[in-house]
Image 1 (cartoon, rainbow, N blue to C red):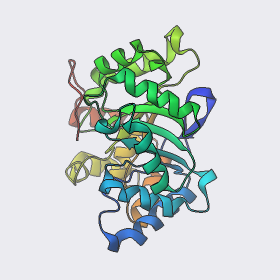
Image 2: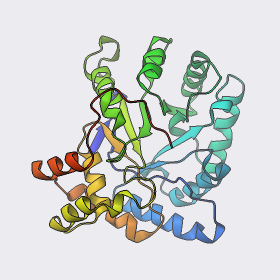
Image 3: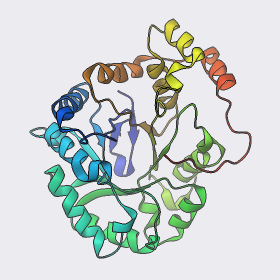
Image 4: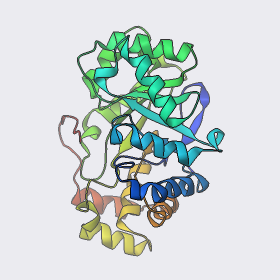
Length: 288
């Protein structure tokens, strides 16, 4: 399994598991838990969730999935922006820890920007890290200007990751944010030896539209794979990018895991560029 380096040299799988919309149907709970557990066995040991997903229900699904194997899993969860204040963030963290039934969150993200000053959120993240409640913190849905502002704040460069929408249909980050991430990781003296990971949510699109594309189907056929596997392989080709597709049944989990074995050719990539052209100018960050 390809890995991505975080700060302190720790490496996590480039292919993880998402949980958006999990925990919303009690009848699906056992299948969702089984899918996540299979994913862990197949090496997708990074699991992403959020207090927003099912208002905490997805975190409870994760809790059951990682029960008895906490040491194998890198747990990512996210806090609502209205809970990101000095007083509310520690309480939100405790609620997530309780639902997840763990002692420490591996990576805790601000879900999107809200009204709470970034400096206050960062200060509180750092306090949670110092107290051992979280190991790393990061952000989600931050564009270039947001990241630049973050880096001007005291301890802002301790940000470990930024989770954003990225797939063949949504390549906007290639017009600014992706190069910024690469520059921030590799060139800034303030970030020496610090890896700023980019996490791609909805890497195979939202809904079935992308997966019905004729070009993807043709490429998938040549690789004896599926359109979803091709879409995932395309995202995973980028260094420093973590993909977190959701798979709530075991068939999709196995398909996702096998995407890591697909090597796209230059001809494949050229055809995908023609079908899904990269942005020619700076584009705003898309959000689902």
